[in-house]
Each structure stands twice: as C-alpha cells, then as structure tokens.
Length: 561
Image (spheres, rainbow, N blue to C red):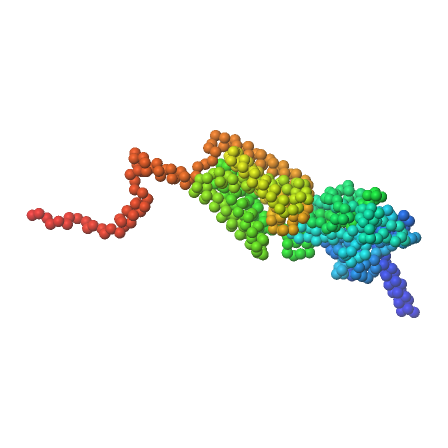
C-alpha cells in the first residue's frame, strides 16, 4: 500500500510539473503592450492574445533580440513558408469572423536560450496590410524588413503592401490593375532611429525599440529619410556605421483613406556580436589608435605653429596627401591585412612628406607647395559640404555628377591662395590641424565627424556606395567635438596671424640661400672666403699631403771645410 501511495504521489507531482512547465512556456499578450519573453533551452514559447475586438481585421506580432536569431512560426513545428528566423522577427495574421484569440510559437534555431521583447499591434480593415503583395520572400504575407550589411553599406528590402480588407473578405488583387483603387496608390516612408552613440547595451536597444514600435512612435521619434510610391523599388542602401546602433522602420500609407501601418522594425550595429574577429567589441584596433594619436598631436602642433615651422607643416601636409592616395590604391588592388596596410600607408606618408619638403628645399617654389596645401583644404571643405543633407540629393547618387562637383570645389579653393598665400596657408593649418585632433578623439570614443572624410574614402573604395544614403546621427559628443574643432581652428588661425604679421610671408629656401651666398663669395674680392680654395680643391690638397713622401730631416749638403 505505501508503494502504491508513493507512485500516486509521483504521478500527481509529475502532472503538476507538466502543467507548470506549460504555463511557464505560455506568454499572454495584451494588444499594444510590450512583453519580456525568455526562451528556455530546447524549449518553445507560445505567445497568446485574446479578447481581440471585432473591428480588428489583422494583427502583427514582432519579437526583437539584440544579437540572437529567434524563429517565429504559426505552428509549434516551424515550417518553410510559415515561419521566419531573424533577430527582428514578425508575423502577420489575418483574422476570420468571430475570432477573438490567436497564438504563435517562438523558439531558437539552435536550441539555445534567448531573451526577447515582443509586442502585438492591431489594425482595422481600412489600414494597409504590410507585405501582403509579397512575391520575393517565402511567406505569403511578409511584414518583415530584410537587412544586409558590409563595411561600406547597409541594405534593406521589404515586400509591397496591399489595401486593407475586412474579416472573411477576399484580399484585393495585387497586380491586375494600377489605378487609384488598387494597392498602387499606397505610399511608403522610410525612417531611421539612431541609438545613443557608443551604447551597445541590450537595455538601450529594448528602450529604443519601444519608441519605434508603432506608426505614431516612429513619426515622433525617428528621422524620415525618404518617401516613395508603389512604382519604385522597395530596396534602399544606407552608409554603414560600424558600432553605431540604427533602427530602420517603414510605414505604408493609404492617402485615400488616410490610414497607415508599420512594418516590423529592424536594427543593426553593422558589426557582429558573435564574431571573434572584427566583432563589435574589437572595432578599436591598437594600430588605429597609435596612428591617429600621433596624427592628432602633429595636427595640434601644425594648428598653432605650422606656418612658423614651415618645413614641419609641409611634411605633415605631404604625409596626409600621400597617405590618403596610397591607402586607396593599396586597398583596391590588394587583400593585405589591415595592420599591414596601415603600416605601409604610414611609410608612404613619410615618403610623401619628405618629397614635398625636399621640393621646396631644392626649387624654392612656395606657391607650388602652398597649392598642394590648398588642395587639402579644398578636399576637406568639399567633404564637409557633401556630409550635409546636400550629399543625399538624388542627383549626387550619380558618380559622374558627384565627382565633377567634388573636384571643382576642391580645385577652386587653392585659387584663393594665389592672391593670399600666407593667409590661406595659416587657415589650412588651423582647420586641417584641428580636424586631425577630432580624428584622434574618434580613435577612443565614437564621433560622427570622422565620417566627413570617411564617406569620401568609402566612395573611392566601393563603386556601389553611390546609391547609399549618407545619414549619420549628430548627438551630444558630436556637438562637443564641433565646438572643440571650431575653438581650436579659430584660435590657431588668430595666434599664427598675430605671430607672423611682422615676419616675412614665407621663410626662404635653404638651397636658394646657399646658391646666393656662393655667388656672393665668387664676386666679392674683399670677402676672406674669396681667397679660400673650394671644397673639392681642399679635399684634393689634403689627399696630396697624405700621399706625398716625407722629406728627410737635417742637412743633406756636404759641409764646407
């Protein structure tokens, strides 16, 4: 009898434990309210929502994790075409008449545990249906935004939407007609939301996702990038910002009924949390910090005393000019490791600096050297102009137009140096020198100002980068660095103008001075150096003295007796 009792107790406990496990793996949602969800190891979570109002025609469910893929499906066993696997996964379910409860299933593809946040959003029969005219992706109705990225660009793609319809009604045809009574009247809007700079925490992502989950939140908190009609391609490219969190959202609008719906937001850091090489935690390379720290210190020197130490300034400008060109060439033509490319770039930069200094030392052409310096300032000014919203104008997505305008701006700036060479040189020292300090700070803490020149570098290295939208966030650190840049640049220019106002415009070339001194000595008879043998004559005389046989000492003639 005791044995039977024990068996009965074990069966009851097992049954209670099974019920408890089912409850633990069942999450009840409320419409429009975010819910934290934990997926256990080798487990499946059932997401349930009930008491759905009768005026709701379809529902979207979205789950978001920071860097782990989750599988969201209509059935407990995921099936191809009825499930989606991503870090930002979503499903859309059209409701049938009298339906008030619906459920989905969530697990991980590798059976590991995962933590996610989810929300269920309701839509009525007048709202557009995101992804309902899908012809590219596996699911019949796919409200997801698909994202791909590389070092240069991030590309998003989504399926076209359809007009809304009520419960139990037949969906409108997608491509039978193209008049205003079909889905071709729909308009799409693409938005960006930037996470706080340098913040890659999961909590930051969760709070940001809550701010862009539905249509109203997207409009209030995100930046609208562009609008497009249903006749345009639903694929767009943006500049990649490695380490910077970005959330992309798409809203589809029905201008006739004045309704809208949101696709599933998608996020990226343009880097991998799971990679052991070049992951999000390894973006700051030691070699990069060393390179830009030295460059920043040299730039600070040039900013305040560059014109006074003209040879040092020429070396720095020649270094930057040659280093940029060589890095573009070596990156496009070889597959060398980044550290090797950076070392070779520094070496060629030194060569470029020496060549520019020696050209001034030998030929004494200050104007030619200053024009090279002016090209560097022109490059920076042109880069700043295209860093603004001007660079996102559709006309500049054409490579020919972009480079013609860019080069024209770059070449026009040095023309002012012909009329005001000293002032132009001092201005270049202040502006360019202060910007190198900004680049040095960027090696330790993220700032968007580094993309002023990095955008142009990416356009050099990637032929497809022209179609990417150049959009970067300006946050608190960026406004601080803009202030530092302006203060350093203006201070450096004022200090150098004040110090150099009573000095010659430019120091004379040492070689030219030596030639003038030599000519003066040749024609000035009163100069003691006029009677001094030339250097070759002195060397030959010294050699003759060393090779001449020594004369014997003492008297050599016979004595007279």
